[in-house]
Image 1 (cartoon, helix red, strand yellow):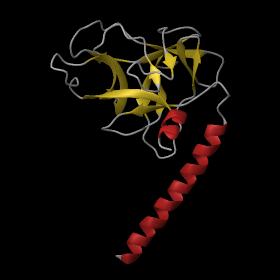
Image 2: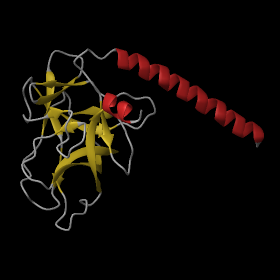
Image 3: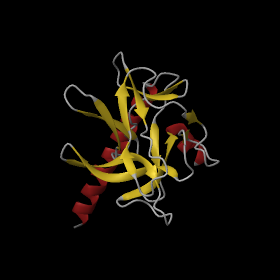
Length: 192
């Protein structure tokens, strides 16, 4: 039993070392105007946001929270007030927030579509709209929020980014928790 525990410890340390060096090299690959986004939630902690293509060729990107230790997420940047993802090719992918109005408990997927200045304008980096740091979406109602919701995408279960409203009683919609988006640098600086 001691050898099993020692073996497990050695494997875990090796995985953490590899993930840390991998994360560091991926972090350096971001251009000066790019950043990575993470989920900010009391329930789930901080997971990087990864753009997951849907369709072949991709017609849209779901935004899911990647759980591996050391993952940095998909590079993101602000183009004016449009929040874009950089997939390493010539076109940008802009986040689109559906207008959920004031419908209690309604949540919809946050999806990115191709094209520079596509998506929803009005994003801000450094203000989440609630007096904190992070990414501020263009609110049209005080009950709107980002949510992390369990959902199946192309037959696989993910924790995905959604946009919507709290229930009438102020609780989270079914299968979701209130979430914020923060930059990796913002998360790191808040822990110092």
